[in-house]
Length: 234
Image (cartoon, rainbow, N blue to C red; front, side, top):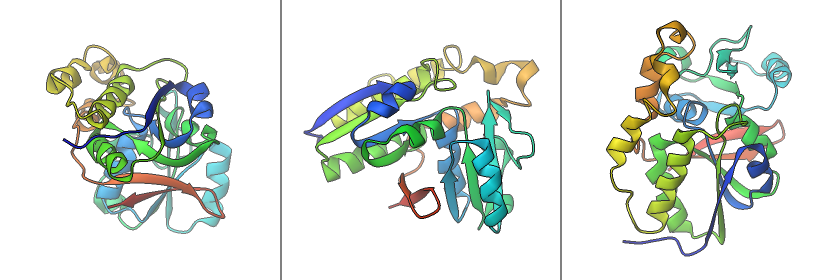
């Protein structure tokens, strides 16, 4: 089995994003980068990850055919078209649209990864594609940044995603992966099963976000003259 031969750093939260160097994978499984991966599968034209709510509203004014997606504390931002829920949208709504996306963790990692040479959006749904791309390109340094809950607390799903990617880089598939992702229901994903929070954290989001290796493509994030852009490659 092919493997990666460079250095891997596993980092955490905002400080980790600031410390990240080399090819940097900003990991947000529940739900930012799972959502973005699904959105490209639904046929969106472009996604722009954004740091602040204010910037998102401002960019909306000058971006035709766009939709605002985002949350704070998991809750849809007031005045936005959608929150951060992949199960709340479908291709009929988003196909051909530009998505303006701001979240409490994932997009905060992007805007703070100032020292990264390249940035990939990380989630379980395309984790193997990310690892295979790293093995193929063999960057000198890889940083896996687990963004956690609100970029303030470690989150089991992001830690598992980093562990899974690293295991593939090391040429060793992680054992019991099916059991471990299912266990997130009780350790990290409990809020998706709370009857009182289904409007904010619907149960279908959980099952969509833990479908590891569902998609064969990666999402690279770079800057253009307007701001950050997430693009699907391969």
